[in-house]
Image (tube, rainbow, N blue to C red; front, top):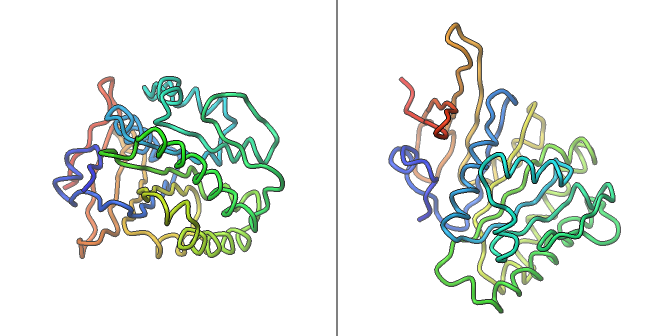
Length: 251
């Protein structure tokens, strides 16, 4: 079982089953839900695990600035092959950078072809991990940030088709059958569309962040809506401090 990298989550909802799919729905940007994921990324890499980041939302220079600001030594982890970035944003908009272990999708990037091209990149990198003997004793993680960007680029209907095709590719492609499977996090932001229920249904764990303005300032909540074991949701509050992220069970 894998840690959430937040002790209270491990204690209150249990640790994560390997190869699970996790949905983090950031209901509003003010909740800074994706920062919880960046914190998980930082800690997983510091523990020498393997992680692939599917960059859908950011120009690469901005993403690298965000990683650095979140305390993630991306240069170190890219260089030692523990970390890779699949730069979907740069592939779509033809903004490419020659950086070790930053991968791009070749040719057309339509949603009909996207899932198989992802699989080809994952297979190529897993082959490198296998040659270097990096699988043994390490967790494997994939983070996609964020899926709602597909709707803005390709439409809601196209995104639903992509999700269907992608699920089939993951069942069949040797990137996922020949090599160890990862545990995957899907970040989704913004309004609820038909895409969100589709991702919800496929996820083993569903978390939602939201916020409100109070007299004391911004109140941020994490709702755990779905896990393999819980029958009722749990609510947590969290805040950002100079020492990191503090989280506690809500009253």
